[in-house]
Length: 364
Image 1 (cartoon, rainbow, N blue to C red):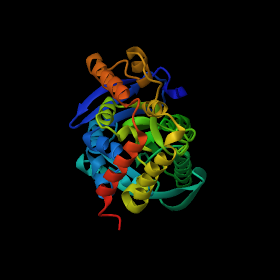
Image 2: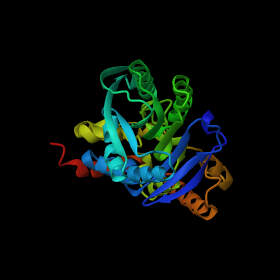
Image 3: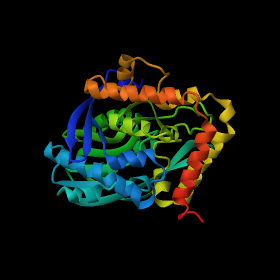
Image 4: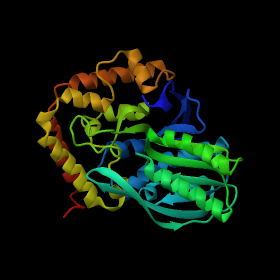
């Protein structure tokens, strides 16, 4: 288990309009961490067929609901500045959802920090473009994917440096992410840096869509996962709603990544098509090199079977409503039992057919 997640548990913060809200409790945190679950983001993260503008729309409900809830909790004010980290950050509908909730956006700023990837490894980062103003005492709002966290760390430290150079100051930061466990480690590291420069800094509120996922640390059971890039459930904290949604589908759990490449999925659909089909074609090639039981356990995040009490602790569900959790546990046990001897080639063929059919209008 990740150090920052030890002894933590999900606590329901209620439901706001169409979105379930959970707070991560039990840790000694500088920041505040929430998981939100909504029909749109569940569909987005379980279905790589959701592409283009639809992938943007899928995030609007959850984002707008959470901003409305935060406003009622006095965790955001009536004004904000939005910083967009180009490509992935453009997927997040922050400006539109602020407008829906009567939050005025004073400034829209931009920074480009792109990963340099060689042989499926991140080998460097390159900041190529910035457009930034630095007012005083602002709420800074950002949306981006966080996997290894290196891109975000470089961007945030660059932003801090520019605000200091230009005489600005940051009162609080609100961050929306499809992200991994590294986000918590990073924000806990960054908060003292903010307070060093601005003692009045109130803190970071980080909102995860559907779960705090984990990035592979190696190539996984199949030997084809991308370390520090591909997301899965192991050692993470997944919303019960997303867990139920995925387990109610035959194949969603076995996708390569929760989100794949967010920028390609929105703006470079042929590249996204290639990545998804390449994954399933590669799975077929290596099908004889791993057992499906090991693959299933990797995707669920623990060796099956596990007792109910072990399952609650592994998934940080100890404080959630017992009847609902027991039903979810039974669903997961049934899913695991049903799939122990599954044919990965059969799944791959089915997914390739479904995916190609769904995207045929985009691919010529």
